[in-house]
Length: 268
Image 1 (cartoon, rainbow, N blue to C red):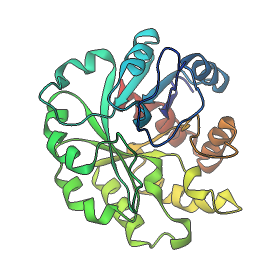
Image 2: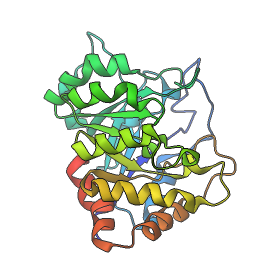
Image 3: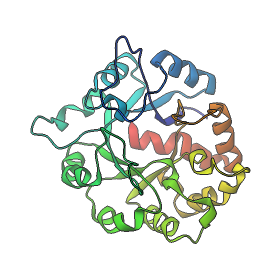
């Protein structure tokens, strides 16, 4: 399989050149561009998507420098409405999306993140400038966003497999909402299941959710490592996450869609 993509990763540091924002919600260890490129090479993945972390606030210097240094990378920015925002300049710099957070529960949206109100303000301008939206949300929250997402003028990529709750099963109203959105073609979905399965002993309990998503719309699915696995202790072996995807996706044609064909359409 050629031209594979990792559609979700973060870069941090070196901190003497790229210090984190004051007031940030977390302080990760350094995870440099060189370390990430070495990871991609070890996985035989040719392309990557760097998601701007909220810990950098409104400073996008590191992201832009990474995209300039490595042309096979694309970027996702956290941005908020501003009169100084020049969306028309971003595509040429390798940016393909703006990221927003709408997670259930209190204090779940990190300092420096953009919220769903920001999404609603910017979605039309994103679309007209060749960009899409990325949304970090969960199945508990999705039903309250469904109508807005269905009517949105911009393609929206939902992170982390929609934050499904394995204990609620496939008939959970939130997961059913995710399936409706996926079936409509209004959203894309990142198949990155492990964060939803940290509290269960058998990670394969997530396989039925994965298979249901493939059954619903395999043309709107991509995959990401979620490297460097922030706030997960101990972190998983990234190669094991790729192995898991391939084990849960035995159809090689569908695996190629997820790893190569779909992300090329979305991020190229």
